[in-house]
Image (cartoon, rainbow over all chains, first blue to last red; front, side):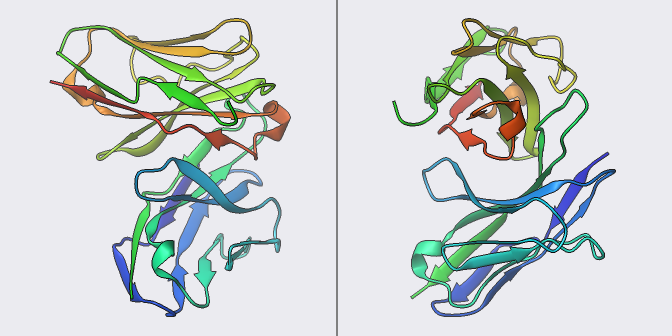
Length: 115
Length: 115
């Protein structure tokens, strides 16, 4: 079956530091890949996505590139802010079959950014 | 409303009682998804609806769980004879239709505590 593995946290950084959160996946077909973010007290929000190999998703200064050869979708940001403190989830979905649109999530990585 | 809404936001119940959780998707969205977020299992897919139909119920954790959707809008997730392991945050998401499964918008969740 499909699975997503992301680096364990928590991750603690100082403001303006570089961020990388690793994510690798296992899938039988050609999944779409996502990063979702959950800010304190809020619901899950889509941060960025990529639907095919070599696509780069980007939003709010965050980027991730779909690497089929390494089955990875690592999240990066050049300079984090205190407001980026949240839980980040890597996820995949595959079309087709009866579980259409089912999102398979990683365990989540807690990011804390200090001033 | 503008987003997915869920009610109640919090529910505390006694073991053995039945509970109903409600999800109101974004107006015009025909696809609806239920997920569960718990400490032990992370984020798990439960079931999805396209219109009023749920093609695959295998993600439901046990036969105590059921879900329905009528009128192509509001959905209810029912848990019968609740157990302590059912304690979790139950998340609902919707998308324009099942072909747009890559654009799932999540509600704030219902936090269920079974005593």
